Image 1: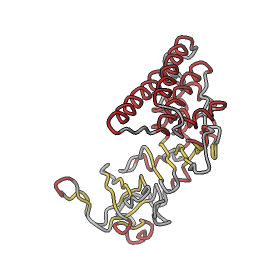
Image 2: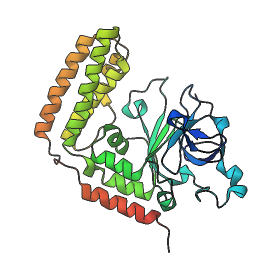
Image 3: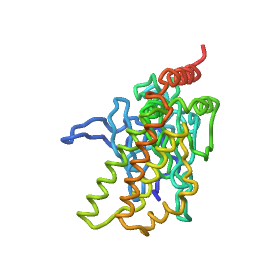
Image 4: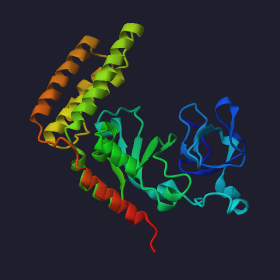
Amino acid sequence: MSHQPHNIHAGTQIVTRVSVHGSNNALIHPCGAVGIVTRTPCGEEQRYLIRFPDGFEAALLPDEMEVLKHFKDRLDGESPSLQDFSLEDHVIYRCIVGSRAYGLETEASDTDLRGIYLAPAELHWSLYGAPEQFEDNEQQACYWELQKFITMALKANPNILECLYSPLVEKATPIAQELLAMRDKFLSQMIFQTFNGYALSQFKKIGQDLRNQGQVRWKHAMHLLRLLMTGAATLREGRVPVHVGTHREELLAVKRGELTWDQVDAWRQRLHRDFEQALAETKLPERPDYEAANRVLITARTAAAPKT
């Protein structure tokens, strides 16, 4: 667990108490520069990732910065006018992912949150631009800006598609509900290349680790098997079945290291063959519906624009 101050979260604007340097110790921003927190510390890490108006990012310790609103009176007019930006106010969708959504949770499992935020026009138009994502590691949460989320969904990113189909939804505004209503438009035959390609490369790395270090990351192997199952089922069913259902115990046996590597690898090969068969049989289109996705984004941007 990180020890971040209670008032510094992802999306918080800060003022630097130190000068910010880049490569070769070149000065990039002086003491007193304004930035926005895009990632909070994780584990024993103590530094926050700060994005500055010019796009430069730097990692700062808590005592190297201060919350901008504490300086509000004397800094008025000297910095971008986003002092009241609150990430939570702009979160349109939040769901639980990971083991709890997959049905693979144990007593030790964390609760991983993922979601979407819709950047206000003021943030888009500011010098900052809208950060593509905010990571709040204390809350084990990550939020993608809507446009970034949609772009990744169109590319059949497994993590993004699982967000759209998570059975554990905590927040969904009307805009998010519209997105969920057309989530099948993101599904296409590209799922085979993305899901299968990632699993192939990661299994290759696991094999290399086994040869070089004599160790297997069994939890990682379990999730790769689950990914192959999910991909094949998606091609057949036209939806992303996030929960593993009846496969729970056999997958957890892999996580516990109760199967040999040869048994896991044989299972993996069977799943690859089944995935190929699912591709041959699928009724999903070759490409996702880019036009429908674009309409949702335009509707959302219009809703976020200031009313005149």
